[in-house]
Image (cartoon, rainbow, N blue to C red):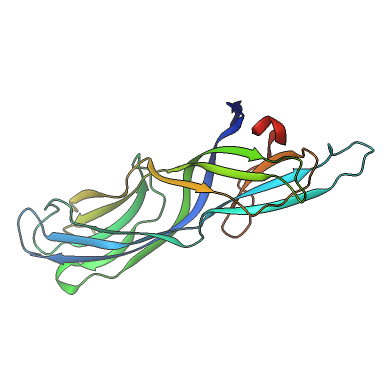
Length: 241
């Protein structure tokens, strides 16, 4: 986590982990082709959402002075936000009506799901789904105005969320895994979400908080309101405008 202040704005950069899920259908044509069938992969990637929670305090916690906390939540990525995809990897695999499985990996090729058997090429293929955690880099600039206002200052959030990559690995075998017959595995990786795919935002939450130049912190939550990290202190209001 990095928090800094430049030109009156507080800048925060931190890594968060977003719940995500993928649902995919796979179709195959030319099952007896050599070097393998034509494959079409389509579906959607659903993101669990990110919210920024701003907390306004009129005093430091732990002092003998009464502390009033007011929070406001700003949705950056709505829960259930969907990214659709339709991909056709290069023709490949093994000929002779192969057995086809799928496994989802991160951008570096590390599995994030178990391998799922889809079926044998000519029989038609079952859909596949998986749930996993998707790392993301959140970069946010926070600026303020009218710090002495009641019920609180004007706040502007802007920045971007850079998502980690997700791939689908298609696995073609000429025999069922675990039999005594020699099995030839051929894989093809399909990019569902490119590494570093960026979602940009600019938000202005409703006027609120506490007056009198409050202390301001930010915390990131998932779409269900669960914390994705500890609160980050940004500074007094007048330091951010």
